[in-house]
Length: 272
Image 1: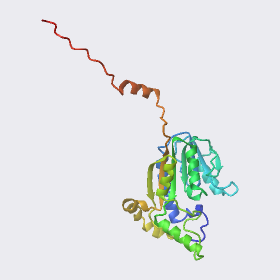
Image 2: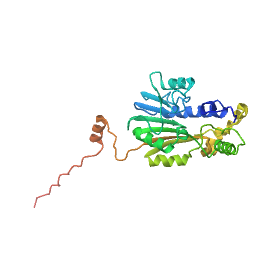
Image 3: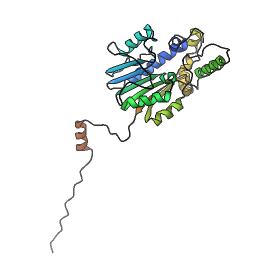
Image 4: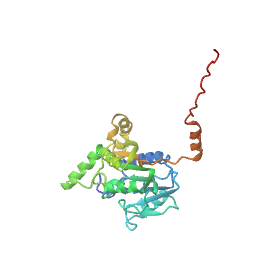
């Protein structure tokens, strides 16, 4: 990529970045439409308003930088995505300022790759989620054309032969199956998953558009080789039973189990 790209926000202005933005917004819009509750949090990627179609009452959009380091454009995008009444937060993902079992939805758009300790970030998310709460995770796939480009640039950069990496501010991709294992250890059951963005990252928008056929072909023929993946997981608490409404319990009590009745004994004929 061009040496003028110095951060992740600017990378979204490239052909590959715009493709990624459109794909992740479409996945996020469908996922949050089925999530309900009172508190939702998105950490990072201020230019991706993934909570814009959420039905959750209180929506929080948190940045990973300090307020002094955040640009005016990022703050404006953050406030627009979270709503004018929602406060703007800057936090450390490995130490979330929320109580245990307090959030119904957490969105991590490439937050794990930007975190100094991705596993500690996931532990914090599992802590603050309510039982049956959901976490939506977006990540770059190392087994893809984008992954090959990233590793090539990093290798050449260490040799002093090339400029910054293909995707800036990302030093280590977290594989799909590796993330699955982490979620399983934290009692976060995967509910949905998908791959996208199969085209290589090119400089030219014209040539990038000409390879648009690779998106449909990738979904059909090589779905695990997408440049980015999306995971939705649910927090399961073993031994906890959801409380049913009284009318539903009454309905189950009336018709769910038949009552056994004793048949009267057959009368004997006493006639000699």
